[in-house]
Image (tube, rainbow over the protein chains, first blue to last red):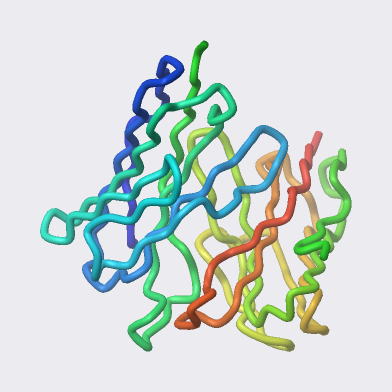
Length: 116
Length: 115
């Protein structure tokens, strides 16, 4: 069973602080690592994604850091805002090597609460 | 541009009843997926399809059937509902892996309760 382990399960951060969510994977063939954001009552939405040929990708206040040797990647949310309160899922799959696995393997999610 | 549309949004079933969940996408995606989401379990793949007329089992397929007769539609059926199938069901679609714009688009979900 290919797994992606996500931590912490829940996270409380003060407004303006940095939120950090970590994921670890086992399958070294994974080559696509997206993060999804889910608000209550909504479906997950793609937030940001990275491929293993880069160590960091930044989009606005959201940054993915990728450590290929440690098989870990993390999401950093800078200047966290109450509107960022949501559940975040990391995921991984084989998308670009030609041996597509057809499915994303998801972490179990982190519920982020940003308090004013 | 509607993206991925799921119907119904809510449903209550009695044990043993059957129902079909409909997913429709208007992005010309080849791949479609059905996931269930349960507290503490994340998203688990039920069935998926890599093209019209094809389906395959995911991680938790028991008790479900699917069909993809048209490229834009992916149906999830419960033949005899059980309380263990109480969950939120999400449909998703994507382009073929390997394309530069690869990524899942999710619907807004169907909340199913089996009593």
